[in-house]
Length: 219
Image 1 (cartoon, rainbow, N blue to C red):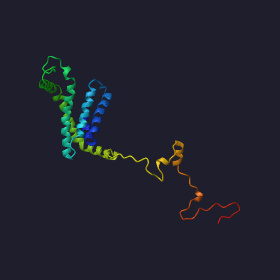
Image 2 (cartoon, rainbow, N blue to C red):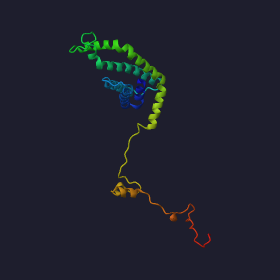
Image 3 (cartoon, one colour):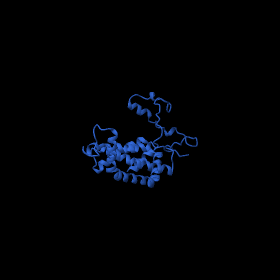
Image 4 (tube, rainbow, N blue to C red):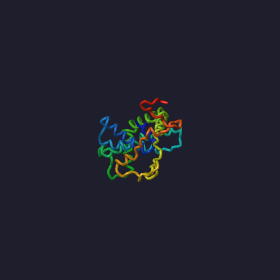
């Protein structure tokens, strides 16, 4: 799933990537019964992955862009695992181990303990597998997915500027202030009037012939 977050954030921007990461993890938790105290942290970490993809430099194209996204996907996979370990590490290892959080200890000492904990529990397992699969998926499916997403972005015109018309601007020979104040009168004023067929002129410039009366022969 991470490769889609990276590609969508790249095409639609950091705001869309942030929302996509958070909403995707929330929907996935509802569908797979993965709701728990870890869910808010998963949503925030995945949102940062999509946000970072949208903030990448916009100049690289072609293979250089795919290489950039694959590298970012691998780094983001490790960063996601690092953040997810941080939320439960202080109270998950107990108080008497070499990997435990020590309240009041220097920051560098606790960071060293956390780095060892992360390397021993997830870096060489879950995080490496996530990084490899994300990078490979971007390399294999990235060009096609980027093309499809950019085509959808152009057709949806997400970047088109929004303009608002002036309500008092003259339109069709009148202004908005000329319309009646009541809804019924306003509706009647904008209904086009029916044109009588007897007063219309044919395409040849003559009036349409009137039907003959009783006892009169048609000319």
